[in-house]
Each structure stands twice: as structure tokens, then as C-alpha cells.
Image 1: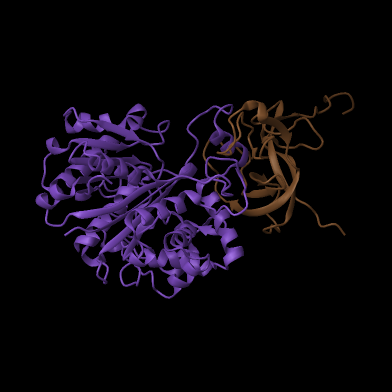
Image 2: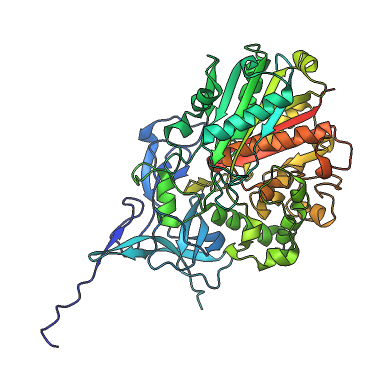
Length: 150
Length: 411
């Protein structure tokens, strides 16, 4: 065997849609916009503040990384494969959740597990693969339950 | 409103799938404009007027343009007029997602109330009979809905299920409650000639149906259907001359969200949370507006058609319409107070979206058709037992769209 088969190259991890979270990164975070005047946060980022009382001035907007930890507001398990353009190969039932972050924003995302989920449990941002080809693994952000500290 | 307005004619097609290869006689091949023509023809017959008497028309815009219908799904108004025969009248096409039906009723009412014309038509046709809805672009750079779908795999029932689980957590809604919604709302289904699923279900059948998005089972979420409905409105004095039983429009309103509402709406990835702002604010805003316009409260309402897209919706929208705290709607259902025929406040005597399957843009008008038949006493075996004077309908749509109306006996 030695010297025969080429060493398996680790595939590159590529976000399915670029620009939504910091990548590559050991501690990926969602990229959002925040209004410097009222603190309103938008994900995905936008050029304007969504507050009806705020001036629509792009100069008031700053780009921020959202907190990586939040509370799971609610969740479900999707048992049937959604149609394209969603792609998960191979398909298996997965959990989706809504997570409340300290910035005052609630964000969607797939969860890393379908087991032992509870409303209001603490979760942390990570990434996970939905499908791959010969060269790349295609990833999205995912919420992972934080193990209770002993 | 400047002038009072009443409904003089309503018409529908039977909901289903056109074509349905298994039942070609009942469900032949039909395009969206063809379904609309059938609904308009039925409404004209009901009002006993001719197509040339329609002075303005508003048409619902089909959302799934990339899958079916293309540009004639978007420019639906003139596509329908092309089949009815062009008469040169003003026609506007409107897209407000599932809230389109009552949104276009509002436009037709405003055209008459303003004095622009005396008789106007709202029509919507839809071909939605396929599975989970999906985004309509292939571009991840500018379409948040596309990003949501490919990154989070969130289907419509998945959103409903998350709302449902939180309600169970906070208000104590049980799995029995969820199943009971289907059992109760399907009671009148066998008696509605326009319903797609004319069957009453048992608790056992609901519990045996597969889990689609936990905690919601297949029989606790609505299917998607093809359908078309039309409503003709006229200035009230003229309406009284045209028909014996004009249905008076007390109020019709469109609601959109309030900034700070924590609801993460379908097609979006997040929401901004501000303390004190309620969830489902587009729905609350629409309902509060129709009560204010009509000078009424929930106590005035004799019968309700609400958007029971899932068992969760049934409870959430009863809360919204009757101003209840979460948990109270479940109690009303368990006590039989919302029974569609015998209840104190009958809900969904049509059989609801459960019996129809949602034909997205047409559904709101289908609700109005049912209320008109209930007010006139023409609903046959599904006629509610109590005396019906005032009725309310509400539809809820994608991405922050809602509409509601209050109608009453105008004779």
C-alpha cells in the first residue's frame, strides 16, 4: 500500500451562500448590520436601519458579528426533504430552530442534532455540511446545544 | 368610506387539482385564467348581471411564476380579461400572498366607495396543487427567501411547527387539542360542494397520519390546491335594487407588521425584537382595523372564517380575532363553543383550509363566498344553527401580509 494510493486530500469547506457568516474561522459568527443610532440589527446585513423612526442614512450602519451563543426559542424536525433549491445529501430528518441572541434579534438555523432539544436551552453557532462534490464540502451555519457545564 | 358598498354576487369553482387524471370529468385540464372565467361566470349568474356591467376589476397575482403560468400568472388581470372578452375597463393585478383575496376585495370596494364606479369585481385564481412551497429565484445574492431556503431548509409547515411548539410550551396546548382541530373543522366538509376533501376525520385517523414537522402531523396541516373565486360589489343603494339580499361590507382592511414584532416570518431569516410588541402583528393590525372601521367588538361576530393552514393557526387566529390570551382558544374548542355548525361562535363552517387545501391567492375570496352564503341562509346542510347577522373573515400570508373583513345582512 505504501506509496501507492495518494493521500486523501481534505476537502475545502465552502459556504453555500457566501457572506452570511465569517469564514474560514475557528469561531464562525453571523454577519449583521446594526444602526448606530437605535441599535436595530438586521440579518442578513442591509444598508439601512429598519426602524421607522430612524433616518435612512447608510452612514449610520455598522457591520457587526452577532453573538455566537443564544437561547433556542423553538424548534421542529423536518421529516420530508424540501424541494430544490434546498439540497442535503444524503437526506435525513433534521431539526430547525429559532434562536434569540443578546443583540435583540431572533435568527433561524438548522440544528446539529434532533435529540434532547428543549425550548430556552442554550445553543452555540457552528457550521455543518449539507452536501459535497469531488472537491468541496458545502456548508451552512448551524446551532449546536451547549453542553451543561458541570 | 364615502359611499356604502355591498356584495351582490359570489362564485367559485370546486377546489382540487386541474387536471386530476383520476377524475377527469370533475377536474379537467384548466389554466388559471380558465378557472377564473368559471368563477366569474358563477358570480355574474349569482348577481344576475352581465360581464359588460362590470366597471372595474382587481385580480390576484399568482406567486409561483417560476413553476407555472409565467408572466400570465403575474399579469393575471388582463390574461383573464382576454378570455372574458376585453371591455376596456380598468384592471389592476395585486399580489399580497395568501392575504390577496381580501386585499383585492378591498381594492374593489375602494373603487366603488370612492365613486369611481358603481360595480366592481374581485377575482383570484390559483394553481398551487403541489408540495412544499419554494423560493422563486435562483439567485443567492439578492433573494433573502432563497438564502433562507438553501441555508436553513425551512418549509412552511416547519415555521408553523416552531410557532406551535412554543405555544404548547407557553400555553399548554396538547397534541389532543391539535388533532381535535382537524376533527371539528372537518365536520361540515362533506356538505360543501366546493371543498376538495369532503370527509370528516376521527382523532384516530389524525393521530395515525405521519409526522411532517414535529409536532404537526399531515392531517393537521393544509394541502395546496387549485381554485378560483370571484366577488362582485356594488354601491349599496344600487345593490338593493339589483338583488334581494345584498351583503353589506362593514369593513375590509389590510394589515402589515409593526416594527419590533419578534415573529420570524416565512421568507425571512430573522426578526428584530422590541419589548412590548406583540407577535403576528400584521394579523392583529388587520383585525383591530376592521373592528374600528365597523364600530364593533368580537361580541358582535356571529360566525368566523379563519386561516386554519395548520392546527396551530386555528388557535393563534382565534386568539387574534376574539382578543384572547393563549390557551383560551383551546378551551373554547374543547367545550364545543367553536363547532362550525352548532357552536356559540361557529368557526369555519366551510370546512376551512383543511377541507379545501389552500389555493393561495383565491382563499380569502373563498372565505367571503362562504360568509355570503351563511348570511343569506343558503349554506344547506352546513348552515350554522344560530341566527347569523354579522360575519368576519381573515386570511394570513407570507412575509407580513394579512387582510380581514366584516360583512353583515344588508336587507
